[in-house]
Image (cartoon, rainbow, N blue to C red; front, top):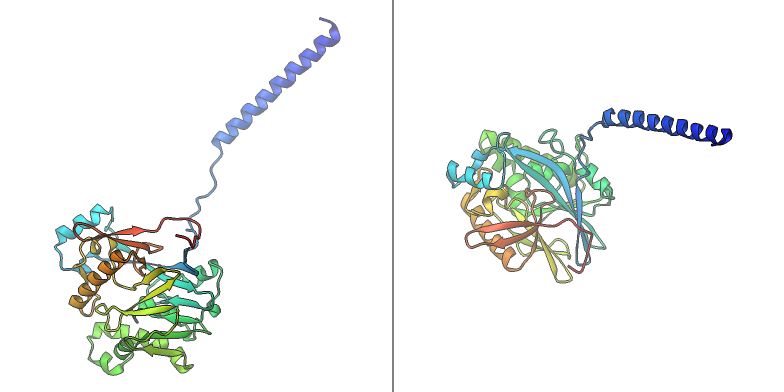
Length: 333
């Protein structure tokens, strides 16, 4: 081998050796590098589905941990079996979502319920942020329909300083619901531990009443053309559900028909302490389950696991909840 060729070969081998060393060092450094910090914030809480020509957006206000002892008409052993069957860890309470639904009809933006805002602590009150994450603003909402006037459904109507959170919205509730929760005479006869619920209901709707924007409807009346009101009493005197329909597709937004999906679908007779008329609440739940499964309705539940959208399936005994599958918006489903 000639001297020039030998020098080139030696230089090439030296360069190759240095490259190998560099690669080894880099690989070692990469292998021992610390990973980035964990991302401890959940994605924005909204999910969309198409309902004919309508767009439905499920919105996550947050969650409440409920004690399983508030479920009634079953034994502790049977209840624990039902919860364990669905892998529900009750060591910190049953995590129960608070969902709100925004329906864009093409001509109106309709919100069903308004979340808990500041009334139930730091695990709730995310509605505004999630409406904005979904591409809308509070001032764009035309109407707010209340399934009932419990604080986790109505407190979000007002801001902490008592102003309208939805400044351009008309607010609707059943007449029987308003007659109960907004009556100081009824409140005065209620147990002391319930007084706060009446006060929160009055505070929530007060700015809309002052502005002439709070309205009531009676059985058989529908406040908006895009829906049909279905009286679903029991949980509260005027508890209402709303049936939205477009192009032969229907969605039933049913409020507080279910608080524990793990137990109440399988055993509809299980009630909850919050029911004002437990017997009526059970009868209403059974009727709605039968209708939803028979008619294959889409269902939206305020306290079903987010996004709370899906179907009810009849079983040999009881019912089952079939949640929606994640996917793109399609109006041809």
